[in-house]
Length: 244
Image 1: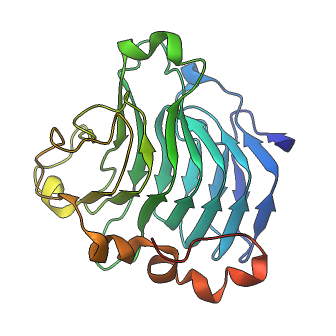
Image 2 (image 1 turned 90 degrees about the vertical axis):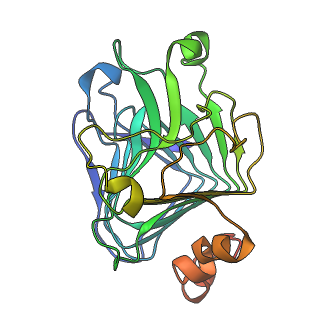
């Protein structure tokens, strides 16, 4: 990727509606030992990120709010590195697990902040690749890695038709420290049609809010239905898949 922008111990924030980034990198250089260090915050409705790199460790991408679309992006991090309460679709992108800080217990990709069942928000990974980064590979056996965990009571995240590395724990999803027991019934985590060594669902968490879903349900989390993208993505010139 070209034109790498760095934000050391700070946040780069996008507010303007209809924002488009293409072939650009956003990086936080704080490193794994400095806890939360956001590379990019997005609060832009109908925002599009195409062939971008978003790189950090903890809390790399703060997908804060509104409708967002990421296509063919590389997103790198350790714990909760895609978080927020946007309605965001990540399509044909590569999600890269990095080496956690010393003493860090695990990696988790998705930490959605949906706080009410009436909110039309959540995260959808579609046709993505979840892989181990070169810095993590030598020590990957020392840490557990998860698809996500419930940041808020109505956290919603789905993984659709993606290739999942075998380093993702067989449980798939991690608990949130201090979350009430009811959270595991009110959250909505789902998987559909995934492949790869980490895609087997027989050992997944037994939470009432976790689901292995069928085609009709999975379609609700596509560009057409989840973010209404058929009406605003074509003028951007960015490739997208409308359905499954």
